[in-house]
Image 1 (tube, rainbow, N blue to C red):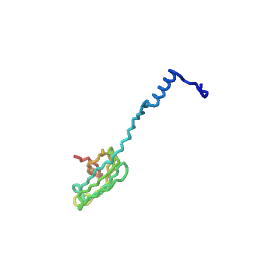
Image 2 (spheres, one colour):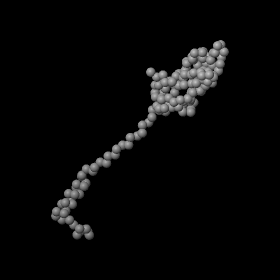
Image 3 (tube, helix red, strand yellow):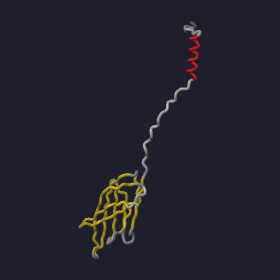
Image 4 (spheres, rainbow, N blue to C red):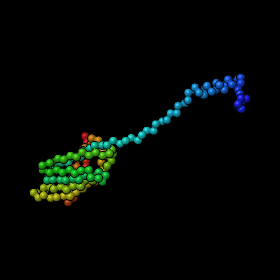
Length: 150
């Protein structure tokens, strides 16, 4: 006993020394963590909406809403027979639309104003093209948004 501690001799001292050396120099196992995949950040999608002056139509103004928010207005008349609007949404996917329109038609030489609307859903992805179309039924003016992507 030395300084109150037991003294190792012989084989016990050798085994203890080997164990100490192995403990110091033995490679430690690496703890590998599997990275957690980060959620995919959605990419914005750009698409276009077209409107053209229809047969017998003198003028038309359409306000377009996507998911309840106004995204723009398209106006066509004798001087501007076509209009286009490019829209960017946060990501590709399904969106609801509402189109609110006021159109003036030449009916047998008399200008007749129709106020109309239409609702539906569109499947959006970058590069798609949509066209506003309308039809009159009685005194009602119906508006639709049609995918014309080729």
